Amino acid sequence: MTTTYWLEHAWLGTHVEPGVAVDVSDEGRFTAVRTGVGAPPPGATALRGLTLPGLANAHSHAFHRALRSTVQVGSGTFWTWREVMYSVADRLTPDTYHALARAVYAEMALAGITAVGEFHYLHHAPGGTPYADPNAMGEALIAAAEEAGIRITLLDTAYLSSGFGKEPDHHQRRFSDGTAEAWAERASLLKERPGVRIGAAVHSVRAVPAAQLSTVAEWASARRAPLHVHLSEQTAENDACQAAHGCTPTQLLSDNGVLGARTTGVHNTHLTDADIALLGGSGTGTCMCPTTERDLADGIGPAVALQKAGSPLSLGSDSHAVIDLFEEARAMELNERLRTRTRGHWTAAALLRAASAEGHASLGWDDAGTIEPGALADLVTVTLDSVRTAGPEPRFGAETAVFAATAADVSDVVAGGRVVVRDGEHVRVGNVADALTEAIAALHASSPAGD
Figure: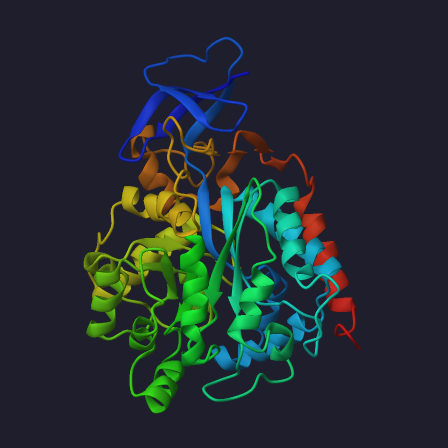
């Protein structure tokens, strides 16, 4: 059976086309894309406004959503913020993590996100004792995404040390499998299924000993799986790496086989020219997370130089200070304007590609992020008559989406052929605000897990 959607205006990768009809198979893929269709065909569902491909959130820590606003009290640095983050991580159990992540992923769906890359390192119970199911926390995240109606790439993360040559501290013991070999053994138990891909991550060069980096890289390579890594987010990490190994984190990753076309460096903020050349020359991607990078006072990364060197750009909401990929795309351009005092570093179309096709590709979904036959049928409709989007002609829809719209302007979302959001309401979770409130209140009311 074929389902037909009529798109009043559709962004087709390079331009906005009025009157587009798309046919979707039972398998959730586009089978036809027809332009010049002036009115909805009989039986078609009309999506009025501007319809985009599904957006991909390439970097997420779902539990950080519980920190929103509470970490804005007082001053500090990334490192003081991290202590507050650990206090939340200490409270999570598989059940509370499922409830929180389900609500967070539903918030993502409301924002037009149809796939998430979950950078997952909360593996064990506090103290490091494995659960009866050693992947109970990862499976909770997978179930949460399925229930929220979005795809997930679970980037199972190796996190083995608290710094160069240092054992995990008491917070981090639940993150660690002890060795990369033990990490690989546990991660191998995770299974892909429809809507679910399993990838790998190196938390950072400070969290995985250099001699064990290749084990993680080889695990990902053998499975042709995505491999992500936090890279040079903080200058302190760069300084510590130089002291321990006499090179930059990027060089260390390169020397140990981590870089490559299926690898994405997250943040890539404080890089040398040689680092940029290594990342670009190897085809390693860059995931920028501008709202988190500015919230944590990390700095502005060299995204323009990275892309020119050959590093594909994707976007993530990371700590979920906000969940809004339009804001992430806008911030990447506007940050660069502030840094250089010049305008127009990316077109709106290029920024949308980073938020859609390039983001999906970084997560192993090469068949998503475009509206064309054979692609996964993801559609995100942005209203063109809100107080933010009203006025410009529809042909400027890409510019309106990137430079004016917010997540609140998303009206309808189809993910893999299934309706997830209709008229601004999540059709599965219902009242997402209530779900978030309940999950976060329950988490804050609990004692640290294991107490």
